[in-house]
Image 1: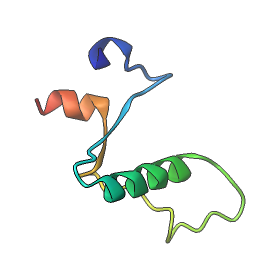
Image 2 (image 1 turned 90 degrees about the vertical axis):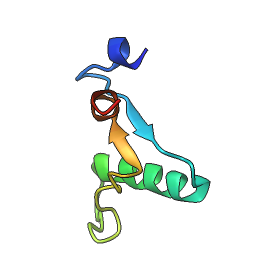
Image 3 (image 1 turned 60 degrees about the vertical axis):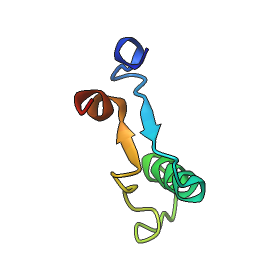
Image 4 (image 1 turned 60 degrees about the horizontal axis):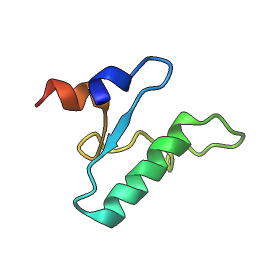
Length: 63
């Protein structure tokens, strides 16, 4: 499913949620980092941990 539906216009993001709290926090960090808004604090809203949040292309490539 990911191979056929992951597009540049609508990319999939995969969140490893073996540790539920960490997965949720990193998912929120990913969304907040991607959205433009006023007074964004880059120290708090940095890139999500790539061990937890990955693009579908990266996940497919490593399987």
